[in-house]
Amino acid sequence: MEIYIREQVYSFNQEHDFLVNPSPKTVYEIDAEDIGIEEFFILFFSSLNQLPLFITFEWYDWDVDGMRDQLDKLGVIYTHKFVPQKTAYRMTEYGEIHFDILIFSVEVKDKNQLSEIIFKSLIPYHLFIISNQNNVTFGERFDQEDGVKLNMNESTTFCKLEYDIPSTYLVTNQLKNMDELIAVLPEKLKVVKED
Image (tube, rainbow, N blue to C red):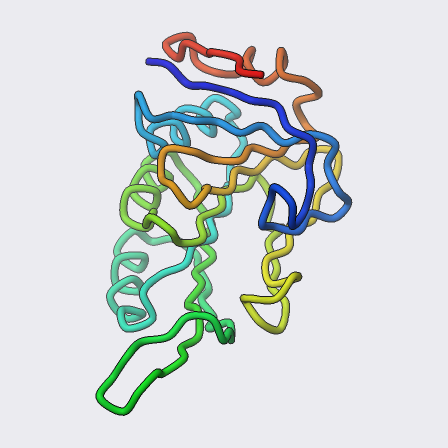
């Protein structure tokens, strides 16, 4: 199973659509098309062996009760909120209706919960973040520059899904370089470094 890793310089608004404070030096772009990004998330965060993990994801605003029921059945601790924005809308017989973005934040305490949440909540073109810390906050509006903010310290590691499903950004202060990152990955993952 191959994954492709490219090292990038963090550049908010140029390359990356998420605000990190303080700014990291490096971001790793990981393409896991061969195994599926869901499987990569499970393998990577299981190999870090740091529980609890925190998953933040965008969900369909019309299905808030459906997702709450699923999370209740898993017995996880979660919160949800609607974050205002102006860029997403639905067409109705009365014209455009702008809607708020529904965000769930879930605390995951074991590998089974991790797997279940990833496979139930990861949606193409929607926000999806996994972190080893509860460090995601939101600005006043989802579609503003500070709409999604991640706070980092010396032991932070998180992944933010890119808009196309097989790729993610991995940001870490915990792993100091690509060699340390590769060293924590399971042996069954063949890593291809890209320039």
